[in-house]
Length: 120
Image (cartoon, rainbow, N blue to C red):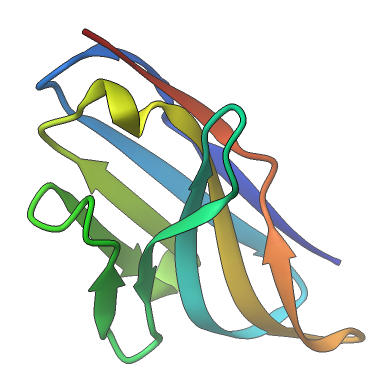
């Protein structure tokens, strides 16, 4: 079994910063790409940032220059540092990872999400 658990969401004023974290646990052999998605009320889930196991990163245009994805492979953890937050960044943020594990092989997993609310 593999679980992804996010933390670090909360309420922040526009222009502020937050860092959300996602820890993967279980019978993990390796983790490939780790990604952050978000879903605002009434909208589709969208990819915010991604990072490969080799360290390559990519970002949605809407967050480039403001958000930074990073990971600690030794801790099976991915972070999303969010600076210059805007009200339109308000959403539930979900972690997604491609994991190779004992018993389940290679598959994708989702966390339960963490709420980020940016007030104007």
